[in-house]
Image 1 (tube, rainbow, N blue to C red):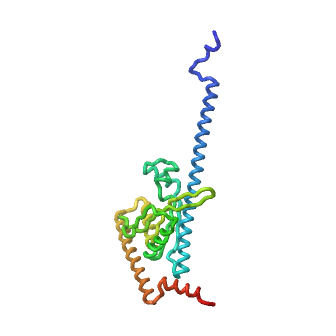
Image 2: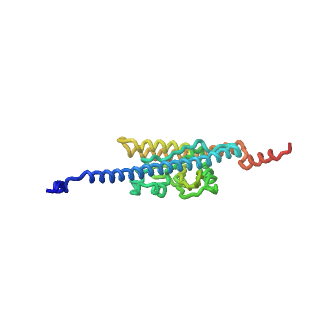
Image 3: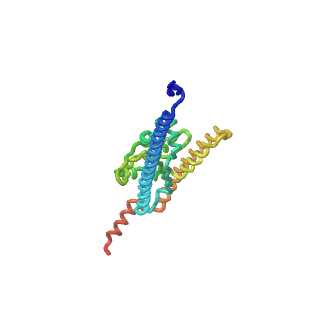
Length: 257
């Protein structure tokens, strides 16, 4: 009897094991390389959004400095920034039933990079937004005025989705950034409402929602009243207008020595 007939075709040979091991290692290596490449691409995308945030924040800081110099007042109290976390990004894509890819992130999400500008008065919000949007490298993609048209829960803020060019070592990329501009009172309310939204097992939740809406109306009325008071004080003190302040500065510059 030939020795070869003793080898059952059901029993894998050593050579078959070797082939399977090589194929498995190749598959693992390919998937590992794809995963590493994807992580590297996502890390680079986060870097680009971070740079876009810096660009937008700097623009508002420049406007703040200019207002201080020209008109002796600063419309900006503070600026907050945030980069959406990876978990939040992929959870949002999953909820929308969108592909979990780098391309999908860039195409479908507008709020990866966020800049929040907090002002003192309501008129500062619109003046800042107008000055910001007039800059020739800023492209407005979407505008939602939740001050004039507040959300059902009482939320108020001006939202802008913009595109800004960011220059890197070897390329330029237009990056999307969400800009929120609101007063300190609006920001206080939004922070409180955000905390309440994620609390579990709150008794009388409907009552709290109604109370928050009532507070939002009170805060809005207070914002408007504070603006009236400021304007009344400026009028009573006969303070110079912004144009008069600028004219005086120019006169002093051109004054003969």
